Amino acid sequence: MIRSKSVAKLRRTSAPLDTSCNKDSIVLPKPTDWHGRSVYAALKARKTVRSILDKKISLQTLSNLLWAACGTNRKAGPFGGAGITAASASNSQEIEVYAATEDGVYLYESGAHRLVLAAKGDLRPMAIGRGQRSWGSKAPVRLVYVVNIGKFDTAGYQEPGLYDPETQKAYYYVDAGMIAENVYLFAASLGLASWFHNCDKATVARHLNLPATKRPLFGQTIGHPGKE
Image 1 (cartoon, rainbow, N blue to C red):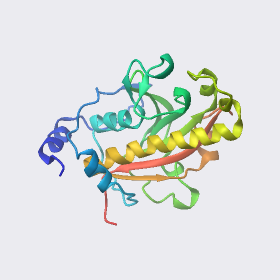
Image 2 (image 1 turned 90 degrees about the vertical axis):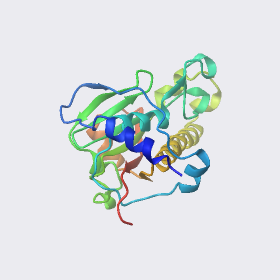
Image 3 (image 1 turned 90 degrees about the horizontal axis):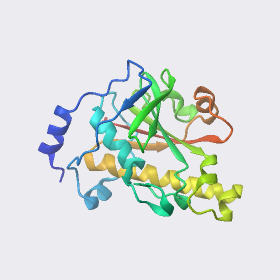
């Protein structure tokens, strides 16, 4: 059972998510214990919900969401680098998470726990497959997962597979999935909706002006559930 009083208090006392000022960077509030469902209950409740309302979430909730996705949870991680909440091949941390909101797209920097403006404008309708643009396009946040192939060059353990294209693909698909499942469990723990899906890769890459070493992979929409 969700500890509803604690969750409600968190939502009331947190500043609303507002990116309309298009700041170059937003320092997120420190992640807090959101007092949601237990791991068992969150796993039992985890599901894909495609009906998502346009109701905003708080900045604190966004902070907790991004930290749960792939935030830094220890300074001393594998191979001398910091550790994050999602595992990655040789601790390469090659999956970059972008948060698409109504007013702009922000890159999440886990070390500083902040958002850095990557592009102005609403990318939410494009951060999904072309045939699904009307679905969830008004949700408060849509995450975009982008692989940074260059991160394999600085991975903590330099094994041959990091330089083999097919092995790289296996690594970054699995690593993106680990982040997505963290987001699913976070959403389930708070009674929020979450939907992992494709994205319009070419449009996203063009809008974010990504180099060839960075490739959009998937999107994930999060918000308050609507009627299914």
